[in-house]
Length: 89
Image (cartoon, rainbow, N blue to C red; front, top):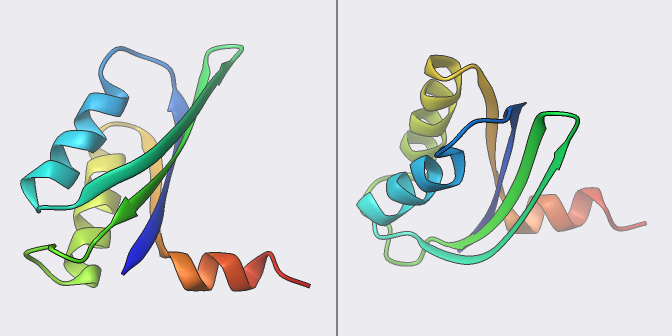
């Protein structure tokens, strides 16, 4: 299964690394990353492959939500198929 992880917040060192470390810690492979910094606001989208993930999707999404709260970021994990369906007319 693939997923999309989105991150938004005040820019600072280590946001991408923090997210990549969570993925690696659960055997989630990062496929693509796009990031932008606009007037100090960090925005990142990651496409990930969860086929070898060692926890449930809900646990993974919850871990990222908690990480976001602890670091003043908004982090969302969405199933790729649902993400695609939302953007298809």
